[in-house]
Length: 377
Image (cartoon, rainbow, N blue to C red; front, top):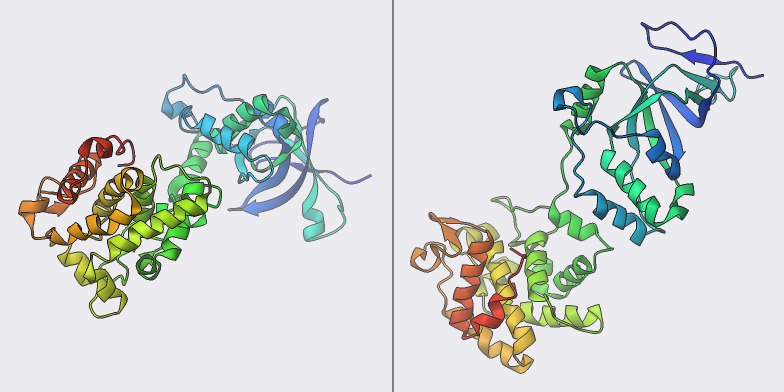
């Protein structure tokens, strides 16, 4: 019979007898900051049963985690149910308030062999999620819609609980350095979102965008050699194609690429940067036409072209962009539109006022255009 390694914290005596009923998990034992922890897997159907969430009415100082944002749960659950063959979840991090028993598969071995075994936890133990409460709630909702997901598993990093203060500190530490990825890199890597895929193809097929776009950052550094960010072009292209119906995404890409290529021809500075005749930083400093508020407004104006104007007329209409004073210091033109207090600004009002102005210069109908601004700002 395999020998048993009873685990307890320093200030707790080892239990005298094994509990009558236990959960048994395959596990790997590790050490972090001098404390024992375990990595295991758990069937999804057990997650709602093990990890109860009953702290909603407690004040923040008495909880080990933030309040559940229930508005996030349906979106995460929908991600699971709509992608049952290719969804992915990172491990849950949890604590258990109980004496646990770990039995090595090879108790006589040292090293890796001794660290692999079975983790036994009393059924009356209390589990607390330190990181992953929204995934836990989403799993519960997804199982209600698709019970077949219940046999799949999720990894769990399990710590031995030593009280509320330690759990709160774990939550703070786990979230201390969490940084949301930039929108640009999210668009670059998201192969599930059709709009992101269309934007990537549009950028690839539009030479000036392909050569002068930062694919990682949302904001360009002063010395950046790029004129655009992928996030800015994505927002603009989504606005451009809003409500445009085509049978295939490739047709959307073709029409958007044609529009942006014609737009690029109206800004000689873009081509000069592409040919390394002037610097990108100088253009961004002196002109306003590469900023996201302008690109977004151009996308909204372009939406009217795509939906209301024959393609043969696009070039003639867009050539009127050259009559606009795009210099940043042209405050008479841009203050109260793309600028506020002398600084470039982007919010819904700025985008709408800027697109109104550009559409007026191009001679486009304002009614058909304004209704497309929607929530893209």
